[in-house]
Length: 140
Image (cartoon, rainbow, N blue to C red):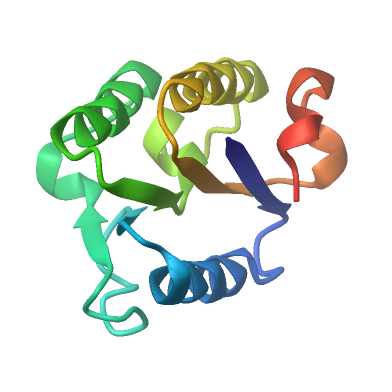
């Protein structure tokens, strides 16, 4: 299952993500992973959560990001939750908001989660009405 936390810049998406990550770590019977761009969440999350700075791995673009997540799941079947912050920055760069790239990426991730018992939650920095119709069902 894929979930999207959607909102314009400064609307509290990352704060909501942190709350959900912490809650998942308390109740999960497996591993919880949080992917971010940079290391700004380092002091906000419990040490029980696997925090990954995507910049350390040179991941840029939707194909690389999808492959990275698929690789995480292939390498550790105990992952129950994956959280990702700054989705657009990872998918297409700092000031890019390509909605079709996002929609294709989310649909591919959703197909991936059908074969695994995992939930992937991503923050998306845009107005909710900008989200393409075909992926609105994933908005929280």
